[in-house]
Image 1 (tube, rainbow, N blue to C red):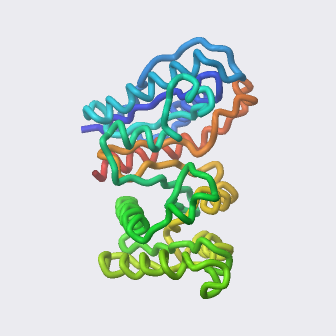
Image 2 (cartoon, rainbow, N blue to C red):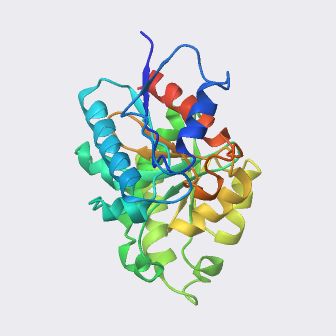
Image 3 (cartoon, rainbow, N blue to C red):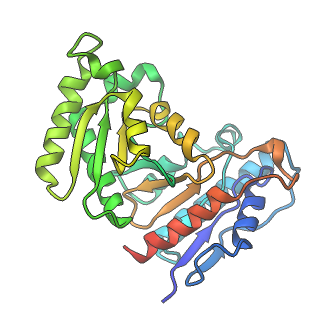
Length: 289
């Protein structure tokens, strides 16, 4: 049977409808799948966030979560939303990752971004930089590292090579710049290597080198300790091909790795490449459950 890939239009005042339409018309999506709109196309003012478009976006996310939960779709691709107006409309989650995890009763989840040259998973997501050290712990890194390994296997990588990036400059220089790398990250690397003999784990890896090493093919994925450490290199090398994937859900939820770009809405300049890759990966993941 053909996998059914649901999709939302996101905040329709932005470029969501454009990149979705362009992706569907691109001829680059797998033909052996059905693509199904969740929600509806609405008439809203383009180019500026507003309460009406946010309300529709929130409602369509609820419908998408229901479709995933009930199994009426095999995966969902969500177009970009505006968090500020979404929160004003009653959306109480930091982002779509946390929303879908709660709606699908999933406590074991993680945020992963994958492009043509780099795959990055995040140990902490939408939180202040100040709070990161207190949120890092060995058990969490082992949990998320396991999800990342399973994702790599699902992509067809037979023996994934995964680096755990250090938190501190120079991986802490043996405690000179902080002890988190030696007391939290190093034990996680050791434990992951023991419980997952079908993968290779390395680290704590010096942050200013490990992402280059991954781009050059020495690693299949990197587990980053915080949001910007991982996403800055990813968006530098894979901005137009990166896809946001919520790991751990019973059915995949993916999205293009860019925002609503209100300044481009209606101008016909929005690049659909990330959305195309999101649909392509959604089909692959739906077929390899």
